[in-house]
Length: 356
Image (cartoon, rainbow, N blue to C red; front, side, top):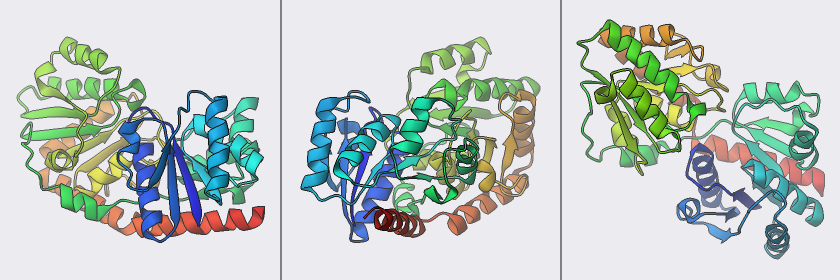
């Protein structure tokens, strides 16, 4: 098939990583796959054919004009936009060129406004989501038919992780709690820092520390919080790490404390690298973590509960190792690039055949 993916992000994150994995795996499977992007920080990571467009707003007429020309020139059969701005631009371009659009949604969002109905339900022919919970949330709006929403779990490129994980990385603390993502409030790093401080208050001699990998606008706020709580020397912000796998491999626990997610790539990667996972009930995490078997789940904001889980895993190394091993087995069993790629292609063909 001739598939055009679109990602207008200004920074690199989980959605961008999924877009890259999907695009490259589709190309390797023999499909003519192309990318429209906005910033080189995203585009530089793709080896497929790509086009840089301004994507300045939802109603960027120049981008819309170029997008329409590109779809016609390349004889695109399906367009897959991956950001909210892209849904609108791709949706309009798809209507003009009579090309089916399948929006990819990677976060659990409640939709309620008329403009959201237009963007998510009217313009695209279908949606790809990465968790059953996201589909259930969308279906509750009454705007969608179930057949129009396909759950395709994120594939994990385990060969690439295995290749990159052996680079040298010093373990920051004897007992290390890791977190990874854009350093913004919706990732819940303030909640994580407060919970970790509560753990330290009960265990002042613990040889433990927290490492937050990523960059974002709210980092100064979180640094100030750690200082106020008296744990600044136990909380390390690494900034952006091009290859986070060696550091993840050093972590004993991985904490995913987001308020809103789909199915976190970072969480799956950490589980594959045998970090014991602790996560909020964000997005489709319950489709991955079985409580006290291969990880732990906690309500966002429950600092006492998160602190107690950290203490439990800190004090019980054998249990921690068993949980971490089961977490890796879960990822190997349920999430793979070939399964994801085949599912995308099958759904694209189905939607394309319905449209022509």
